[in-house]
Amino acid sequence: MEEFLKQWLFNPIVGRLVAALVGVLIVGAVVRLVQRSLSRYLKDADSRYKARKFVLFLGYVAAILVIGAVFSDKLGGLNIALGVAGAGIAFALQEVIASLAGWVAISFSNFYRTGDRVQLGGTKGDVIDIGMLRTTIMEVGEWVKGDLYNGRVVRVANSFVFKEPVYNYSGEFPFLWDEITIPVKYGSDYRKARELLEIIVRELVGEYAEHAKLAWKELVKKYLIEDAKVEPTVTMTADENWMTFTIRYVMDYKLRRTTKDRLFTRIIEEFEKTEGRVAIASTSSEITLVRPTVKDKRD
Image (cartoon, rainbow, N blue to C red):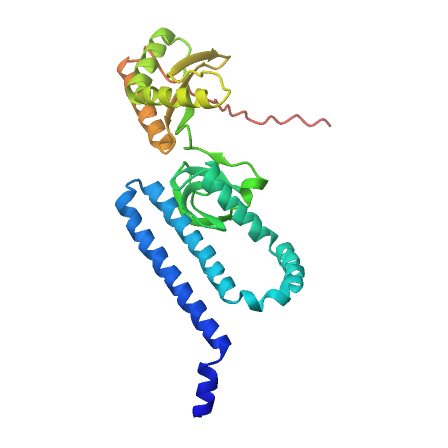
């Protein structure tokens, strides 16, 4: 037994394994220490999150290098075999490699970041985590109407950034254009209707226009894009049924539903105050009952 323990303890392979294990533990300790110290120097949550992910990635690389250095002299004769095996592994894990490349692209090319609302791989929601292989999204929509969470967490492979369009609702321009239509009955004072609508939209969503102007100016400097109008507008069309007023405005991408609720509520209240001078149109149908007639029978 004593002889066996001596052979085991003084075995070069065991010594290398212990050295590799100690090296990996040291790398892990350094990674945790650096991650904890990041909160002292980085106050922004997004920057702190990205830095922690990057430090973790460097830790994995360092651990692989330590293991490779410990067993470097044992790997010399396996170069050809590893080359052939590497080619096969690369083919089998091409989706994983593409996802890793996607993670690098996401981290350094500003596709999106945590907290952004995106549509990725057919899934729309808020990004809550960006891993090396997958992006985790808290989904909105589907069976829930409006831009509200439905409670489903979706994980999408990072490789999708190379395969499909990435729709970012809150990236470099964190506002959306939205619009509502109001049918107004013929015979109403259309001038008064336009005046009321312009006042309402300016009061409720006009503040977003000032912030949107600044964000749009930065976008124009960066891209070849025209200087769009971000102020609220009210336009009118008419057909055989009623006059239709369209209200177009910019607003926070997370407040579409509540903003529409506030606008419609205020519009109905203000129209009711006019005591019939301005009225919302509606479709009415009249049903007429016709008695069946019985033809006289001939002899």
